[in-house]
Amino acid sequence: MSYAETHEHHHDDHDHKPTGLGRWLFSTNHKDIGTMYLVFALIMFFIGGAMAMVVRAELFQPGMQYVDPQFFNAMTTMHALVMIFGVIMPAGVGLANWMVPMMIGAPDMALPRMNNMSFWILPFAFTMLLATFFMEGGAPAGGWTMYPPLITQLGDGFPFLIFTVHFLGVSSIMGAINIIATIFNMRAPGMGFMQLPLFVWTWIITAFLLIASMPVLAGAVTMLLTDKYFGTSFFIAAGGGDPVMFQHIFWFFGHPEVYILILPAFGIVSQIIPTFSRKPLFGYESMVYATAAIAFLSFFVWAHHMFTVGMPLAGELFFMYATMSIAVPTGVKVFNWIATMWRGAMTFETPMLFALSFVILFSIGGFSGLMLGITPADFQYHDTYFVVAHFHYVLVTGALFALMAGAYFWLPKWTGHMYDEKLGQLHFWLSVISVNVLFFPQHFLGLAGMPRRIPDYAVQFTEWNMISSVGGFVFGISQLLFVWVIVKCVREGKKADEQVWEGARGLEWTLPSPPPFHTFTIPPKVDEATAHS
Image 1: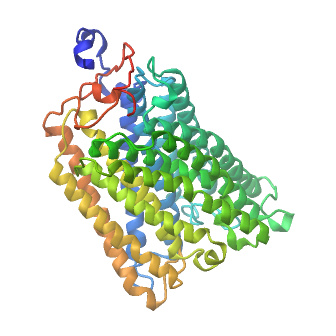
Image 2: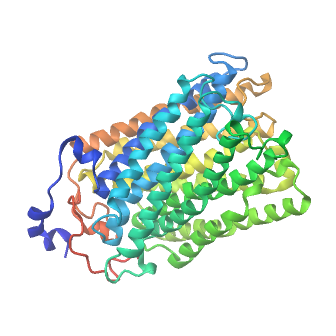
Image 3: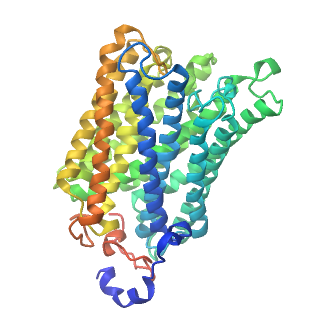
């Protein structure tokens, strides 16, 4: 029996929505807050994308064309900060806000007021960050990693950068605590941990990673702040400090951060592939353990970002082998996704296309990551465009494509309308072709020796840079189609039923589309049919 049939008489009492601006400013409803996170991430996506377009326009030909080197460096730095902290992370939290309570049969998040606050910190933080463009000395231009001594030479924008990072950390930690409290305390009766959908599992693990790693970043940037303004010498060699210590502290945060960005993507793909394969997920338990193993190992590999700093050989060997070991649980996940599809009754709607391209293209990013993890080879690849190609395959065709897959997958559930499948597929094909034209040539540039973060380059790199820039502009423009698909879906899409996708299983698909403002006012009873399988 569906939610709609059982709870028909409750709708009159429980579906009162607040209206107007107050609904959004003071919202404690997980769906509204999830929507705000997702809209915020989409806006930041275009801001960060515009910065990337400046970079690609400048690199279309050798020589300085449009911007000066300082502004070019500010563009690369701000592009990374906006995309990581303003797009991928908030979009993941937005999906968690929307879907986790619905997937576990909870009425809302456990700490709704804190939920509101954790969102509203973000627009203020990014306003502060973007305001640095108008300050003496300009925006941060020392790379998103904020390595000293370069970053401490930033002008008036420096404390604003540090405070922004603190705000983002506070927002992330609050969101993570909320997600953990919700999943641990508000599951529907009968739903054990091993019946949770994989998206929920990946978010439990991601939330613990956030709580463990964000304070490390806060510590590192606070030390930068005191070095610049309060006379300390944590990272100043002249005062007995060590700039390489910053790299150790930063990457101890930075590597778990990589998995904070990608684990929710694994969760989304683990929901989509079984749905469109019409089969239960292959090896559910091994997927849970593999996710936990990836998170655990992520704390032991940080110095693979630093092979060229002059580490002792024993350290280089340790970090090389530790890095390779992460490939094992990741390989388990890829194998399980492929095994899920094996002999399934597969169909290729837009969410499945994005999920499939995720599996293939993320694997390319994984393989290039293994290449970078081999110490002697990394001496050659380090700080070249090969690294740029590697992490964009992980974060664009990995995290971003999975987020888009999730948006297409759940959009009919959120809005009650189907999106235009033809337009969705057009968006997919434009994106997947252009993203490879954009990033694949960067492997060749890196192997040929082109350094990253340079505004000008030697003439022999011209052709691949031109091809890469063309791919970049096509990719950027095709994302406008994504916005149009969403707008068209909300306005005029045909009515979606509660199931939406044949083969979709789980509590969220028992709710009407769109779900009522207050979801599970009476907890649903969980049995084998509504569990993850």
